[in-house]
Length: 308
Ligand SMILES: Cc1cc2nc3c(=O)[nH]c(=O)nc-3n(C[C@H](O)[C@H](O)[C@H](O)COP(=O)(O)O)c2cc1C
Image (cartoon, rainbow, N blue to C red; front, side):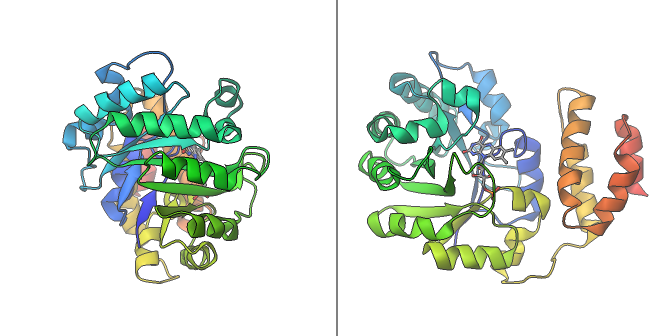
């Protein structure tokens, strides 16, 4: 079973990937989406989205980080893919799932699921631009406003030479409202020869096993659940519904996060509070800590609350 850490803009950034792969058991991670329009991005942009490029494309724990692109320009996607592979990216993923209005208005992300021929063109352009040993994958939702093209898109992606396909089991219209329709991935698995990875609403080991059973996938991608419960992959591998990491171990993880580098202190505080807020759903200790730190504006004071 492969367990993949989902790309999440503003959440699974390099520091979060570092801490989650430090304790978790992920086969690989995917960067936040990098939007490609009409130019080849400079090195420093790539290093800022994916500093792991300077470490053979791996987190400090040794977990590979795939680079995700979003865009609709085949030539530019191809040129940027070739470049980031030269910089050390171990694989390229293409985003056909983003529901953001601005992105969709510019014909990027999930809106392209209404155009399977465009999806094919974009995947093929990237596949042809990078060496054969570098995997190219795609991530899609079931559709944009409806599910009329689910299989057309899946076939388009496979026929374009993608190595695997990840499916977030909802349409763009479904947004993030539960449930995720894991059973709707099953016909895609049946129709394709390439591997299909299931994604959406996996919050615990029971969800993971239900998703695998209903989708017929062997492999899953986990997003918010992995941030909320950093030991989720360990629980899934051990088939356990009990927490594996103690709160003191999670405190160490938070200390590691807070010792990371953000451009500004305020940025670091924002990101940390976002994470702690998510952890309050899983840990009573996080709720107590949250009550103490939620109004703090200085990193030093937040760290001292964490240490006591
Ligand atoms: C804050 C946030 C940012 C996201 N950013 C991306 C992204 O950059 N690329 C992408 O393909 N999906 C993105 N997603 C979708 C996730 O990768 C995933 O498909 C979705 O959260 C469902 O999985 P989950 O229920 O395990 O979180 C994002 C989701 C969230 C919540």
